[in-house]
Image 1 (cartoon, helix red, strand yellow):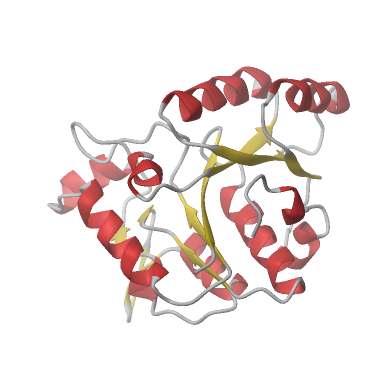
Image 2 (cartoon, helix red, strand yellow):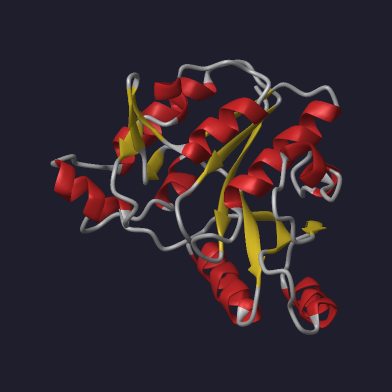
Length: 229
């Protein structure tokens, strides 16, 4: 069985899906078989086939293996709000045990690399007592951190790193993702993070108005992951 990583970020809209798809494309270019999961997705649209999430659909296009939508995104919620609030409104109970079971089932599919994409930032409640990031601990999965490069990113990134490590999750690597067309002193911010984050940088993705997985992959190096694939 291959390696599995939990992809998280400094905040919502930091570019988790963009980077996750880029990592999948980079792995595909090396001839690796890949799969990706989005266990919880809020902000889904109603279709003839049921609720569908754009991020989950993007993951399905980027990975090499074919899985049913319900395995990639087992918990689809319509409102684009915090998952635990959306679940309450829908009368759905989310638990770590339930999500871990879904993930373990999908991960039985033979693969070289699997990426589990979280929701929002690191501290995302599932219910009154559990956080989504408990899934990384439950599955013993190292984290990859996507840093949305904007004003304030240094504090956001370092606080997130502290939380990841304090929760007992290994940090396998991080990616700098420029989410605004202009950021004063980008290089200085990037170098500060590179010196402060105790994990390898897997790449620096420049701002793209219409990113695609193949283009993003050109800026990523999965060979830098601390746990070899």
